[in-house]
Length: 98
Image (cartoon, rainbow, N blue to C red; front, top):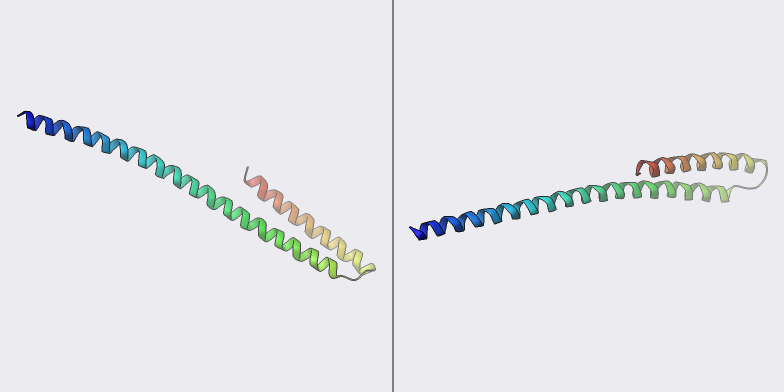
């Protein structure tokens, strides 16, 4: 009879340990899922920033290749407009992360 009682106690202890371990693993899993989501969001934001910066590089490269004169001032105005638009987009992206 004592053997059966000891066996039941042992099973009870092991089931509690298993339940505790399950709870710990579940919490760890949820933390990892949250971290993964945050990392994916950060990656997408960084990709967007890279695209915006590549556009800026393209615009600046074009700006350097434009000849001087009256056409230059018109082109510079257009480039400045585009750069302001890009800056606005980048600001919006940065504010979205806060």
